[in-house]
Image (cartoon, rainbow over all chains, first blue to last red; front, top):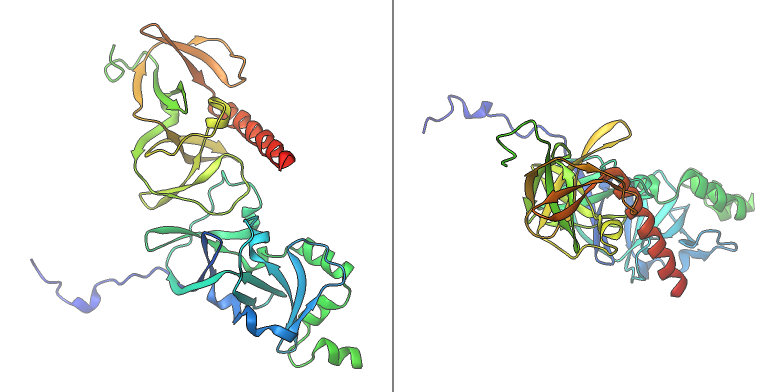
Length: 183
Length: 156
């Protein structure tokens, strides 16, 4: 076999790559862009930072959690995806959205090389839940959309019933809700 | 008569969905595929059992069983890939089928059935096989599955 004249010129895989976190809820695996995850915590370690919502308007959101002077609505992963009751052991605290997602397990970090659009035949809530599908290790896995866990309308409902919490979540780091309440 | 050597006579693909043999116009069918892995994930669209991966493309798997044979199709190794027009675009979907499919040619005798999705039937050596209107079959199957889900929820 003839060797390439200059092996250095052999084109490498130029497809864009994206680091993702693979997590599971019930029997299903999902991935989410690592850049949209601020922190991964064990549910046991949240402890005193969790506050129950006075008026839970959504079945899937019953608590808020405060981390680093910011507040996040805690979204139950299994209820969000309409799955059977599961046992969350980890929480994904998201970046840029006031959402922390309860998941059963963190599986692994991976590199996503392809993002396939959700086929048009899918016409339900999944169009909001997912950015698309990817293939990891010969397995098709949905790519969760961080903005799909709580839609703008759901955030508005939560804010209406629990005024002040959303502002706390959107407030710049360094000023907690309690601190602002003191002002 | 051989379907391949007579372009004038319409061709149909005869398939088995659950317990019922039905036919689809040949031009709606892309291929028959065997043994792809079915990948399931949470969603709320009726009829979709998951997706299969075929030549780097993701195909949604649409189970026509609830409308065509009255119950979800049993698990299978075979999928018929068909083309649908959705929102102005063509999309390939995989329909689970039981066993092999048959390519036949013949003249369809028009006539709507009680089901609401039959456009006519073929006479195959004495056997009457209904020819489906795919989109109507999907609509009826969707309605049947929603009805079934509501009934199950009401009972639970």
